[in-house]
Length: 71
Image (cartoon, rainbow, N blue to C red):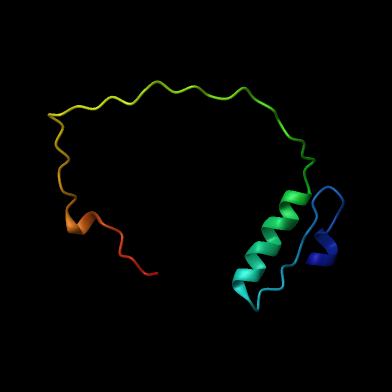
Protein backbone atom coordinates (compact mmCIF):
# COMPACT_ATOMS: atom_id res chain seq x y z
CA UNK A 1 0.00 0.00 0.00
CA UNK A 2 2.75 2.47 0.92
CA UNK A 3 4.72 1.78 -2.25
CA UNK A 4 1.67 2.26 -4.50
CA UNK A 5 0.22 5.31 -2.77
CA UNK A 6 3.44 7.21 -1.91
CA UNK A 7 3.37 9.88 -4.62
CA UNK A 8 4.84 13.43 -4.65
CA UNK A 9 1.38 14.95 -4.16
CA UNK A 10 0.57 12.71 -1.18
CA UNK A 11 3.62 11.44 0.65
CA UNK A 12 3.65 8.90 3.44
CA UNK A 13 5.94 9.28 6.45
CA UNK A 14 6.65 6.49 8.91
CA UNK A 15 7.45 7.40 12.51
CA UNK A 16 9.57 4.97 14.52
CA UNK A 17 7.50 4.80 17.70
CA UNK A 18 9.15 2.44 20.17
CA UNK A 19 9.68 5.47 22.45
CA UNK A 20 6.32 7.28 22.19
CA UNK A 21 7.48 10.60 23.62
CA UNK A 22 10.46 10.76 21.27
CA UNK A 23 8.23 9.71 18.36
CA UNK A 24 5.79 12.54 19.02
CA UNK A 25 8.58 15.09 19.26
CA UNK A 26 10.19 13.81 16.06
CA UNK A 27 6.83 13.94 14.28
CA UNK A 28 6.15 17.51 15.42
CA UNK A 29 9.68 18.55 14.41
CA UNK A 30 9.29 16.94 10.98
CA UNK A 31 5.89 18.53 10.36
CA UNK A 32 7.13 21.98 11.33
CA UNK A 33 10.13 21.62 8.99
CA UNK A 34 7.70 21.21 6.07
CA UNK A 35 6.71 24.90 6.28
CA UNK A 36 8.83 27.97 5.73
CA UNK A 37 9.08 30.16 8.79
CA UNK A 38 10.00 33.77 9.30
CA UNK A 39 9.69 35.93 12.39
CA UNK A 40 6.67 38.25 12.40
CA UNK A 41 7.32 41.47 14.27
CA UNK A 42 4.27 43.02 15.88
CA UNK A 43 3.75 46.06 18.04
CA UNK A 44 3.55 45.27 21.76
CA UNK A 45 0.08 44.94 23.21
CA UNK A 46 -0.85 47.53 25.80
CA UNK A 47 -3.30 46.26 28.39
CA UNK A 48 -5.43 48.48 30.62
CA UNK A 49 -4.88 48.39 34.37
CA UNK A 50 -6.62 45.53 36.16
CA UNK A 51 -9.85 46.29 37.90
CA UNK A 52 -10.29 45.08 41.46
CA UNK A 53 -13.83 44.51 42.71
CA UNK A 54 -14.14 44.19 46.50
CA UNK A 55 -17.55 42.48 46.29
CA UNK A 56 -16.43 39.67 43.92
CA UNK A 57 -16.79 36.16 45.34
CA UNK A 58 -15.31 33.14 43.56
CA UNK A 59 -17.43 30.03 44.00
CA UNK A 60 -15.76 26.72 44.77
CA UNK A 61 -15.42 24.28 41.88
CA UNK A 62 -17.28 20.99 42.46
CA UNK A 63 -14.92 18.02 42.90
CA UNK A 64 -16.53 16.08 40.01
CA UNK A 65 -15.49 18.86 37.62
CA UNK A 66 -11.78 18.80 38.51
CA UNK A 67 -9.28 16.94 36.36
CA UNK A 68 -7.29 14.56 38.58
CA UNK A 69 -3.63 15.46 39.04
CA UNK A 70 -1.53 12.60 37.67
CA UNK A 71 1.91 14.24 37.76
